[in-house]
Amino acid sequence: MAILVTGGAGYIGSHTCIELLNRGYDVLAVDNFVNSKPEAVRRVGEICQKPLPFVELDIRNREGLQRLFCEHKIEAVIHFAGLKAVGESVSMPLEYYENNLIGTLTLCEVMRAAGCKKMVFSSSATVYGLHNPVPFTEEMPTSATNPYGYTKVMIEQILRDLCVADPEWSAVLLRYFNPIGAHESGKLGETPAGIPNNIFPYLSQVAVGKLPKLYVYGDDYDTPDGTGVRDYIHVCDLAEGHVAALDYCENHTGAQAINLGTGHGTSVLELRAAFEKAAGVPIPMEVTGRRPGDIATAYADTELARKLLGFTAKRNIEQMCTDGWNFIRQNPNGI
Ligand code: NAD
Ligand code: UFG
View 1 (cartoon, rainbow, N blue to C red):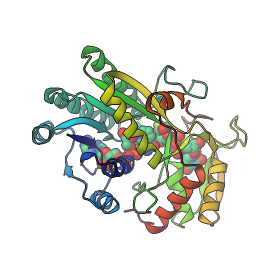
View 2 (cartoon, rainbow, N blue to C red; view 1 turned 60 degrees about the vertical axis):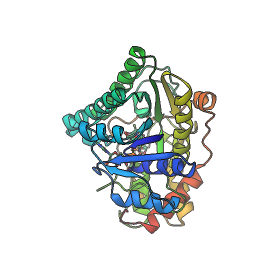
View 3 (cartoon, rainbow, N blue to C red; view 1 turned 120 degrees about the vertical axis):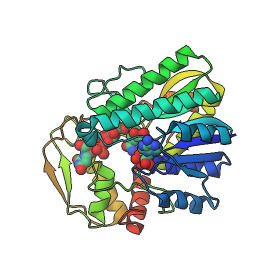
View 4 (cartoon, rainbow, N blue to C red; view 1 turned 90 degrees about the horizontal axis):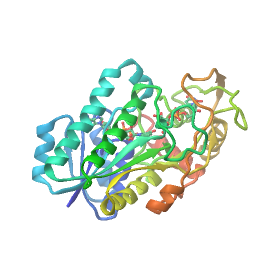
């Protein structure tokens, strides 16, 4: 029985495939490479010393998915495939709704027809919106401020409705906080195309001299040092969280949202200082205005993940920066 991983060549998907392969799962990964490269698939195989079974496929391709479910006995799906850039989603809303929603609906329909009713879905802390107090707990109201965020809110709802309609379904809605870092081998990490939007790949590129300085988006927030505070989680911890969620999915039905974070907030200035220390290079910076849509502070209540999944993130900010630096140093131009 195989675990199907959609978006398996992507940043979080590839690290999760490593974790699954290392634990002896039968894995089948698919990706259309809209935001990743075949080299990531090869490197997963290199790290695990066994090839990652992989099919190049767009999950909106119903016939292709049906073929996959006919040819393989798939017991559960970890569903990462989706477009994820907030700013791009504002300028290309139709592409985001089409890819993320149609992709997920097609996948769910094909799963249902094949009798496969277990899914671990990549949701996001973005569903907590602008107005909830920290720490964010899973029962808080959800909302969104951009098309990307709306796709997460909507897909969560679709999966909840599906689980109500058919009590055999099991869906774990994992709300990731801020995944950063890289595999300890330095062979896999995040390689965004163009100028990164997120702080960690941006910092990394400043550290290797590809960008001149970090722009800090505001130092007048109501936080200890005035800069934005986030809950950064090592991508390998996140990968372990997915395996725990898969186990949970096997033994429970219904839809369940679960935060994956560390429960600790780190400011932009603290993250920069930790990266400087790990890399041993200075990271020039300039404070600019706030970025529209940003909130001051976001961090997870991690109690439910501990209780339901037995999951606690193990790696600290220093480890995240050391591994991230190791990756960018070896792969300054991506993989
Ligand atoms: P990523 O872009 O590296 O990975 C997503 C993968 O999905 C890519 O390899 C892409 O090529 C593939 N893909 C997209 N549309 C597809 C389609 N129609 N068919 C097949 N493959 C398709 O992103 P990531 O950081 O690994 O994120 C994985 C998931 O986690 C996404 O759903 C994302 O929204 C969610 N998430 C990410 C973060 C984050 O900060 N990285 C935070 C919260 C949630
Ligand atoms: N920041 C800077 N300079 C930069 C980039 C970011 O100062 O060049 C600051 C931001 O203002 C924020 C913090 O760094 O305070 C983190 O910003 P990111 O863009 O790295 O992450 P966000 O928390 O804004 O958002 C990310 C993803 C969302 C996801 C959310 C929660 O982009 O899609 O984490 O998982 F929803």
